Length: 114
Length: 112
Image (tube, rainbow over the protein chains, first blue to last red):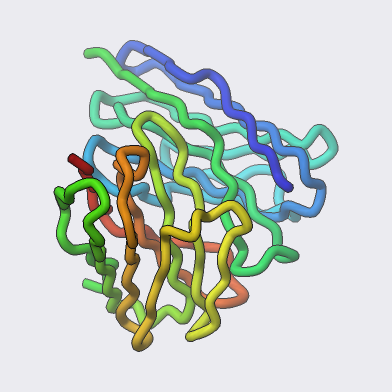
């Protein structure tokens, strides 16, 4: 089955700095890679995603890059703000799998200090 | 607003006492998922429904069952909760043929 590794597990940055979270996956059949933001006591919220036919996608301060050959993808947050503080999960799924099940990384706890 | 709703948000049950968690959606999605998320861990898929077709993950314990009486509602039944079943239970929805999944706020289950 798919195995998704996520690093780092914790990340602390100063407000205004950039934050980068990296994930690797094992199944070459995976073709969809979402990122979720989870605030304390809430469900995960989809913030950006990328498909395997695209190398990079950007939405305002958030960008995701994908390297299919190396099987890794990254989340980049620029000009971080305190409200960006949360746990971020990467995930991978394959059209081959029933229900397009998401395989999550273990999460990165991001703290943005003013 | 279209959304995924979970009730209750917090549930306390006794060891061995059956408990049911509920999920409803106004997105009219034909796929519904149940995930278990233990403290400081990633969500783990328990099972999913495509319409009324039930799909169980291989390592989901028999203690966990689910019902989907109609498109809008899905229930998670834990027949005999153990202390190790204390977790956040997340419901998500999606459309068959599409990867995007949309999560509810979760129900935090405590077992005493």
